[in-house]
Length: 287
Length: 241
Image 1 (cartoon, one colour):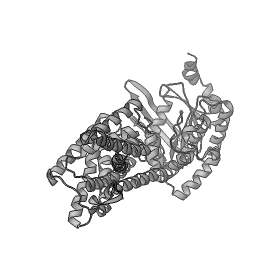
Image 2 (cartoon, chains in turn cyan, red; image 1 turned 45 degrees about the horizontal axis):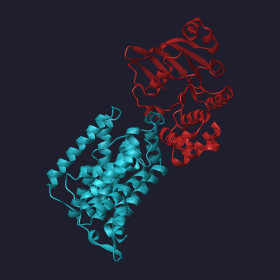
Image 3 (cartoon, chains in turn green, blue; image 1 turned 90 degrees about the horizontal axis):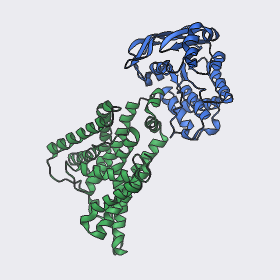
Image 4 (cartoon, one colour; image 1 turned 90 degrees about the vertical axis):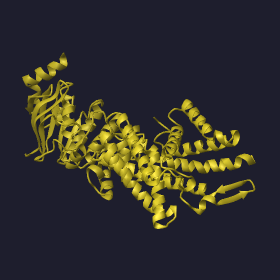
């Protein structure tokens, strides 16, 4: 039991980070039925924004959230409003290709500006732990990731359920034509929804940057994690995203504990395949 | 009475099919104009053109004296054109109250407080007060039909387009819907109403427009239109075939 306590705690906490990484992608699929292939790169853009702002203003990564989050809203609004909206409703491929193009442009832009060097958002929290027993410590940065992750998902849930914008987003995702006939400017609503999704990606980017090292080309790595989370939990479901994050992180860390560190990713994908075989729509998915 | 809507030589083609063919008519303010025609006559296409779901190939649509032919559906809704569907399309994952609220806020342009008050009034009118918190997807057909009416009303329309609102209902249910339509008309809202049940057209409409194969056949007093030779040949004849 002693051997498994640490990976279980780490897995649960890391699950919160995985969930916030995936929530923006899951949300946009639920609303626009769009698989945003640029999600990981947009999230990493948040990490680099935090890096630049922190260096320029001399503030810690968590303080940079005050600027990163609104900037990411406008980035998301622009990407959806001026690029993806133009190809919506024209089969599945054009939005996928546009998102893929955004991904490539972002990676190369970041590479040009920041060079391929490894970066991280420096914080004292990264090395602090809370000792529980002689064999169990809680890494503070993981705890922070999980708490912020759950808080962001809760805020998103409340926003979608309780606000007029949230109702309009749900109406537009339910039946776009009917929503337009009810006076809803669906394209503007989609752009705002992407803006909100990118706000969450911005938070995820800062947390990832504080927890791990990142590079201009790290985005696809997190896109795959986001895919894993939403496939396990169910695309478009917030509860599912949280559950998917927990299951993926736990299976990775427990797998690494049982079979060795080299099997960490492998075990995550095995669980993913099992879920796909048993429940293809994901645990909380309906489609 | 002044014309609230004027349709001039409106044409819509799908490939080689002229679904609406040089159609011209006007709708007078405050009236109920029935639209009749056999299946495939172009009635629903006409509604899709009036609401902006389709763009016309030729012709124009004047609403309150303004050309709206190329405006978006959302803008036309905010101008005051509401619409119901033959097969109801409420937002299934939203409650009855939320369905109406979306229309009142976005289509009607009302503030939160006024929208909530307006929604309460509409719920009373359509008889869904007891189902305020029910998800629309769980409602039976009659309630979905009345919710369609309510959603159109929530957008604060001056003109409502009803697409077979009584279709699929029993006689008793259809009578209830007719009652609601009359109450809406009494509020001074103009109605254009597609209906296959000719008795409802005879009872409910002030004037009747008959179309066939997208073209104008007759327009005028409902009983006269129903008994005209053109309509009997073009509509009832087609039904018998």
